[in-house]
Length: 172
Length: 172
DNA sequence: GCCATGATGACAGCAAACTGTCAGATTGAC
DNA sequence: GTCAATCTGACAGTTTGCTGTCATCATGGC
Image (cartoon, rainbow over all chains, first blue to last red; front, side, top):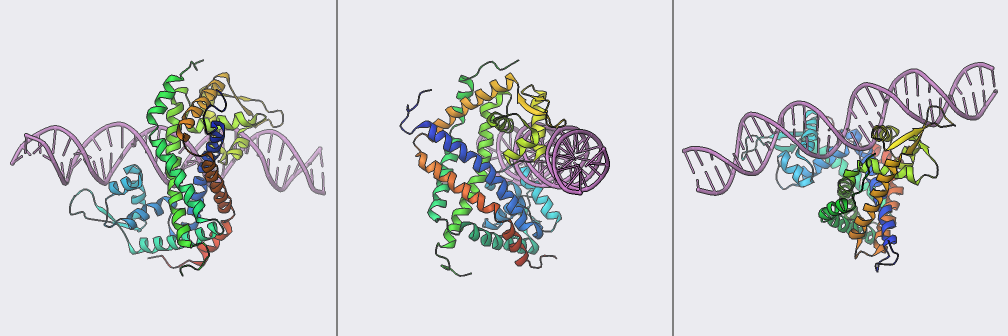
């Protein structure tokens, strides 16, 4: 593998991506942890909060499968969270006039109160986190992550090709 | 809550952070998925690969609890992955002269071969992902995520204060 | 030397994502 | 109108992280 074979110095990009990936993993864990701590006493978790957010942002009540598609998750993951929140009185299932077996998820008044509290706390917390950071830098980071994510999504064929073409004997 | 009360336009930062958080969650999922696909036929997963990386980068063999601390994970998560890899002959436990109950994790030759293959594939894949992206932008994104992570780590007290001070009656 | 304290691994169980399979409900092609 | 394909929720099981508890071992104050 030669050096300086590409215009952009591949080693520099490789190192930058390695660091970025580590940060993404750590940050994801820290965000879940902080989110849980921020809303724990409201009867919420990060997962519940995200589902309530999808319900709140939708222009009309949605069935579980719809919510899952909007969030990019599997149907069953959202189903379990919704079941748990229903048992806790945070959401309620309303009959769906268009589909007898797909009830619509709606927040109870307790669910709405908890969600509003959670969002208010989030804003307070985020304002403290970003104080002194230029918004442009935050936006630029988001843009880069989005670009990376799109490239990863488009790289499935390349992954398969790399795995096939670099296959060596690993067996004992 | 006033508008334009802070120099940096809090709404703009809030929106940027919201987008960034969504990207971090999505990217984490995509990275795990892509990593699994990239090394699946080597008997590795993303989790195994990360543990092997921690072993490979350490200047000397480490016990499981040390590896977990380095990775920012719980001891038991790493323990289970190590147990699985030991059953598959990718790592081996060596006696620890300093601690009878904390054996040192070392790669077997099969483990080393698999790890080298994984790293070579990762480089090929990453080179394709970053082609055309300025390395400065990747580095800047990493720097911002790192700054955010440090601020989150320092915000535990503030989270508790926010939760306490904004507590309202949510009960039915 | 003795014993509290902490580090470590083993084990059990929880959380939140996944996949697979199934039956009932809806929808669209014909 | 009928029937195949699709959508949906229910249920079971897997993965990969977590927490909590326990017994054992190491270390350091005394």
